[in-house]
Amino acid sequence: MKRIAIIGGGISGLAALHYLKKRFAQNVDVTLYERNPYVGGCIATLETQGFLFETGPNSFLTNQPNTLEFIEELGFSDQMIEANKDAKRRYIQIKGKLHLLPAGPISFIKTPLLSTKDKFRLIGGLFIKNISKDQSVYDYTSQRFGAAVTQRLVDPFLTGIYAGDIQRLHMASVFSKLWAAKGQKKKKTRLCTFKNGMGSFIKHLSQQHKACIQTGIEIGNLEQIKADIIICSTPAYITSRLLNMDVLNRIPYAPVAVVGLVVKKNSLKNSPDGFGYLVPSQEGKEVLGVLLESNVFVRQNKEEKMFIRIMLGGSRHPAIINDSTETILAKAMREIDEIYGFNERPLSASVKLWPRGIPQYELDYPVLRQAIRDDLQKRPNLYLCANYLDGISFNDCIKNARELIDRLVV
Image (cartoon, rainbow, N blue to C red; front, side, top):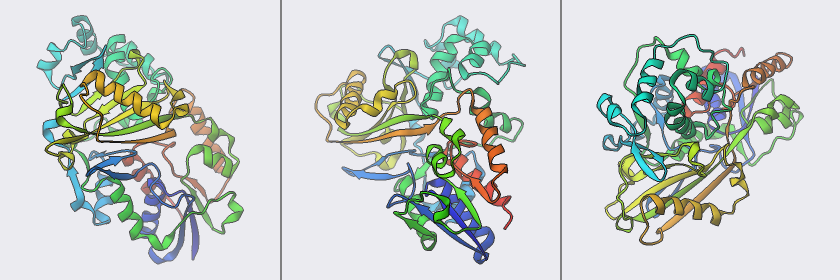
């Protein structure tokens, strides 16, 4: 019987554990080691004033069949809920005002986000081909669609995913899944979460495999564990120390602060509408975006109260890691006051700071990724499965774990 060790209990490590047990059943002895007293990594759900505060990702898209199969295998499909269809309206904040993001031809023609010239440039850009993807997102989209589209649409969109700087993010690496999906049959994509939060899924998943999970154990070196195969699912900077693989230390991470506010609906002068809004980097704000959780998911909708989630920091404001909880909260509240207007303080506030939140696929990422692959070639029976490789999303992590286990020879 082969002994397999998984180091790291985030969604990547947990998914790898699940697929190992599913594929090899009783033919492998698997142990997952997690240094924290809990598993899930950045995925966790806290309750406050009857609302669910997601400290990390709050949802996922159904455009990856593998994720839906994964959830079904675990018997958790009945816990899935869809985003409220009435909350589709999304906004971009420009100079302190919210502008509706175009959702169709008519709204595109009318939007003040772009000038008439910019709109024609965007349409024309759809027919431009042969622009190198081996450059920054900013350079690629500026060449193809113009500066205004890049700054006012592309920039906030990528900010909402990576919390990164599009002048440093590598186009081909960031949009690799988009290129791979070209030509495939498109299915209706839904935004989903779970009735009791993303954390409830982690609890269910870990409970299914609790006999294989050991928490509160920090692995300092590989000699500490006896295994025939080792899968490292820790962040790049931790894996770098563990494996003495210097190249991993060159993958930067964007810091992200997440603030959750419970407010009385009548305490806001301007009634919050739609999904929320994103803030382009040209605005110079530390706030990356605001999500109106009560509007998005019905479970969060209360008669007199609502829940708002604010994201701050990112690659463009790394100094957020030096701020106290009180300072971060004050910045978030100032933002909500500027846009919606506060008549009184929130009923409760929660703050979670991730000093190294999201790995960044920057301009040298293709070189770094190849160097990682080359290094692994010299280390038989050692594998990496984490969000700094091949996609940062919840869906990507599950898909990559499955693909790794599918090609594993035991």
